[in-house]
Length: 268
Image 1 (tube, rainbow, N blue to C red):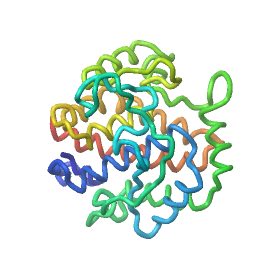
Image 2: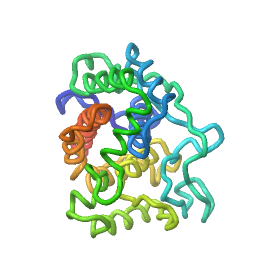
Image 3: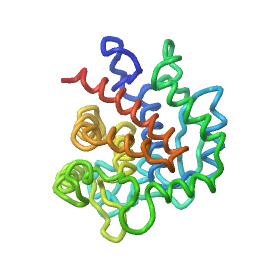
Image 4: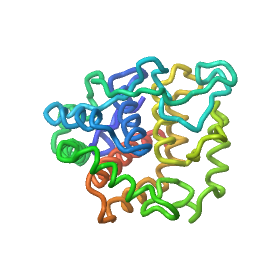
């Protein structure tokens, strides 16, 4: 698997499946899913702020639910690829809590200090320590909520086609069907929501089925459905005057996407 260190391409290495690097990548994708699907609670902000010294990633797990795929409110597994029987729901647990992950070699690796990714991560942690849940809730609603057109879209189809629910969504649905995922009609968010894509990346990194959860699938999903528009979304967030906490989230997201792309480029 990948070891997406924030260095020049010759220094980026592929990590073995199940490595600390893979665990860190999965944790970070899971964190992005959490932050983009809803405003973080005080518990999440406190966990982030508490990592200012250690600079370690955040993983969110449920008390009783599955260990992966927990932020896919619109997707339902319909193949053994998800480790479930046909028709069983793969969805968010009712109660989520942040927990301390395994040692994170992605961000605390030797020579990583001072890198763009490390600096963006530190800025996110310090910002989390300086805001309240109420402030972040208001910011989330100002950026992504409200009636009518939001200030910032978090849907790939908007950036790729200029409108929601266009051809990019159809292509994404076909690709998700190939890995055993289908949309649950009764729930609101579409599959091209950044949080849904981030959690799908987490599943493809940390899942148990090597036929589906492998580097090739990760690269394909990332390069087809995240990389073409992710940076534009980050630009839009950073350019909005209402953004404070999410400006830091966007800065970290951009650096993380660049590191992932740099590592995936080694496979071409």
